[in-house]
Length: 316
Image (cartoon, rainbow, N blue to C red; front, top):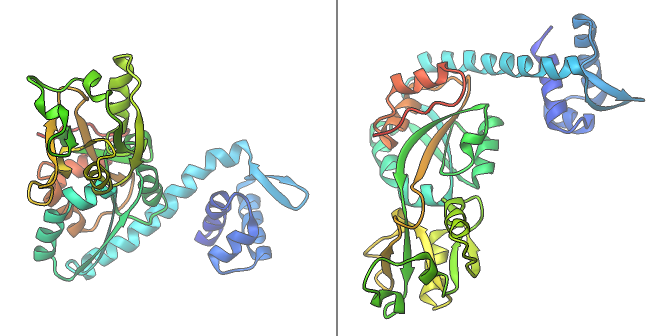
């Protein structure tokens, strides 16, 4: 048994059983991939893949049971390499952070600045995407740390840790009728106007939809976007009322808008930091996590990584 055999099995599943793609991924030939798989099956005494002629079409029952073990073995091999690098070069290397636009734009800048001052020789790579894309980057080993509000907790292969809680705000142009209300804005009052907010699956959008549904109100959502700055731009143009994350409000930059507190309308949101279960973290990765969320010390992260299931250590 060797790691090339294990990689052949893993990439075959990832590439949808297309051996031509697997060969390209592993820089080898298609017959070479077939041979690696066949030799592993002979050694284990079971068929890992279902075959239709010369084509692989799926995993057998033993193959489905063996795949998580293959993944763990390859992950531990990567951990060994990372452990070696940890001792050889403690203060140099790279760190890849995957985050949604809201996190990258509003929550991460201070943490990134402070981290760079502590570790000037570490290169930070910041990737933006949807919560689902962030989870996939973590699972594929393309990112070390993921940060998002929604979806990350839905992946059992990831350890997720709470970072901070936040609420939504309503943004309107100066002189908007909602600014003349005597009391806090209501859902019914909001629904009288076109609404501009986040795409489904982004930045607490599920809590916005849940609130309107629970009240039996069907709002007119005329425009959605991933980016709070885009939402605010169209609010400035008078196209509707915006619902954005409170952290996305910048008093200096948003002087052409007015803000209404909406924390009483929508459930509180929880931003999570995610790590692939079983992964080896460099020392400076722990420091980045603690810089971003001070309650997530190395001890807290290690405890979560060692537990089965998703950690729910509530941040203060």
